Length: 130
Image 1 (cartoon, one colour):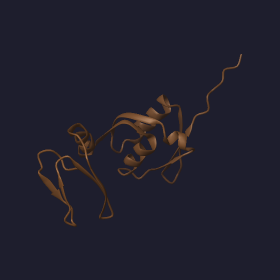
Image 2 (spheres, rainbow, N blue to C red):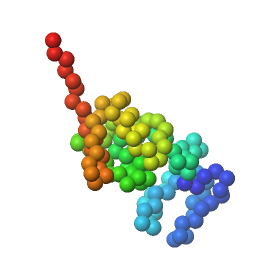
Image 3 (cartoon, rainbow, N blue to C red):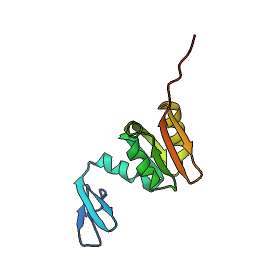
Image 4 (cartoon, rainbow, N blue to C red):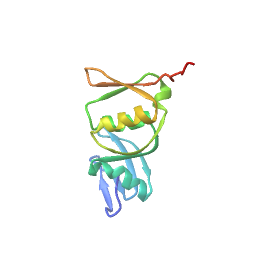
């Protein structure tokens, strides 16, 4: 993200970016370039303060972003779990905070394995008998 106040950034291959542009770059290749408004730029740069903010992104996108900053890998029991929309501020590296929110507010079952995997599944609704 080329943030306001910086007139331009330059990619190692000579591509120049101006304030307000965002580029997705992986393995030294530019995958996409677009424009974003100032509030979105501020949100995208929160990682510099050790935080992230989500405003209705799918859970699959949330865990993809958080996985970049931890050693955990996430697995979904089905695509419906990954489609759940999530919002809020989270500290980078504090996966337990996110997992508590998912378990308590979204009725998602969280299981960890010994290899650093975190399995997320829809919790079966409890039925009351009687």
